[in-house]
Image (tube, rainbow, N blue to C red):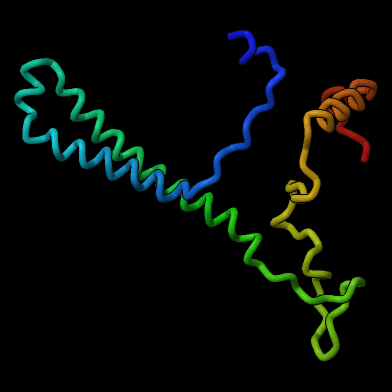
Length: 149
């Protein structure tokens, strides 16, 4: 067993597949089991196994939440890939024949982007460790003093 846990093996790549179809299939199975067991409710109840029926119903209900979640996730993953880049010059000026955008270039961060990090700059554990180390040497303001900007 130690040859599996000694850390010398690399983890396999995650499986990619149609997650939406998998969750829909699992939800259908849970609801089908619920419906198939429902006529035998009395039999299950006499033997103290009526919780099996309610487990299947709960599995189907959670499956509906799962379908909603994986469809939203799938749409969020596809959304950036489907967006076409906006044609603008490097200086943010409008192409010939179009009015300039008073808010600036289309890729400039706006109020909706406040607090968000760009996708090309993921936050890593090393970044966080560096930030904590950088902050450790700073003098903290006292109550009511605020930070100088």
